[in-house]
Length: 279
Image 1 (tube, helix red, strand yellow):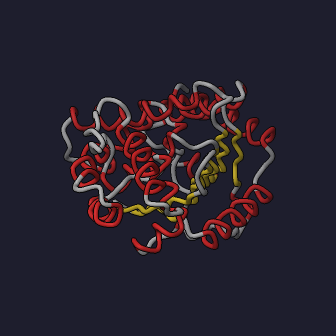
Image 2: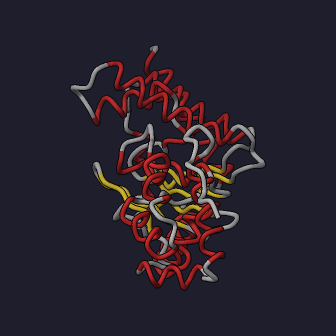
């Protein structure tokens, strides 16, 4: 029997790689959990590879070829699925984000990437890379704006963002940029594209003071949580960790202003920024 064909990088290589993985696993009569045991990973991790919500790393590609008897198919085609326009530490999370059915995010220090305007994103990218060329910054901003297209159809994705007041008070890019950024969030909320809540300063101590939260749910794969630091990031699928982070997020929504009151505050702050910029 001839082996599977090489993947075409232009036709969703991760999805094709996942489909081939499922086919090869079922041909060997293995469940996801059984294959996971042989790779020392969870069955849910195998499921995420098969649905394309996780990127296949080279080390797993080599093991899959050995366990499933697929010669060097996964090893050869893994590189096609690994190509990304995003920074290495964020690439896998960005790709998972694109296939999520729901994203719940707490942003303590800056407006979430999916809600940013080009001007705000440029200011953030420039702050991260002060010596980068304009071309580099433009590419980073373009990639970030492309991610936001998942919000174009409100029936495809639930995005629920809890934004700390600190992120809204920090004048990233200047007051005019902030006025535009907050109006953009308000516009998305009023059009039903997102649910936005503000966690105000007077909420005091809260359950996520140690950092950001990003939970992602999928139609055919277990949920993930993404942890991000300065120049680092990782996806986690451990059910206990995901469950704890979901509970923490629920506590935040209880402490935050209601969506209606949050919208009033965001629009008022946008007006203040615009007024202060043009006395």
